[in-house]
Image (cartoon, rainbow, N blue to C red):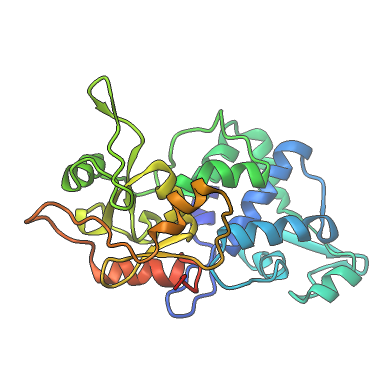
Length: 291
């Protein structure tokens, strides 16, 4: 089994279908450290704050301890933890990880493969991104994890392929107009600044179908994937109460959307299915919504 396939087999905690990208986030962080510093041990004391930020921004809506992936990734043959007492993780509790001066590192076989196989790091990082996060989040996530993927290889063969027609179908369904703000820009006969957003992320079995898509402008696509914006069962726009924006632009572009009906697709074309709205509401949207 190759390393990409081994990463694909990572065991993940699951409860009620909640997405659990904790281990993938730690791996992306570790790959970034490897890219910059090689196979040096990563002290938990140095990684704790950075992992907490990654989990807060790109993990599930509930709070998660950085000790969870630091300890549990050792079960997948990709990550080792040692303490001042010797090999082996002391557990996921933050106090034990701190007091024992725990440090983690990629498994030596993986580190050797990354050093010897050009492009493996990029392919592994690309797989982790595609399999766990919406595309609009990849660039910012890589910056936070310290990863440089400019020379990354193509998508690994283990990834399923996207339907290239999805974007055209969704934009046509919404008449090339943002479903949240009605932006409809064109440049030299080509649509510009509009995306086809998956409601249920493609990485979590969201189909490339109009019933799982919204035509959104670039900024509202990013905010939708970050959980600032959501949809209710009545196709009304929800704005997270956790979002803070003090400028007039923030009020006009985000806060004023709360309670506004989202644009519907053309007559005869599929509305967003309720199951996909429910998935986004539970897995991405940062509750509670503003009144």
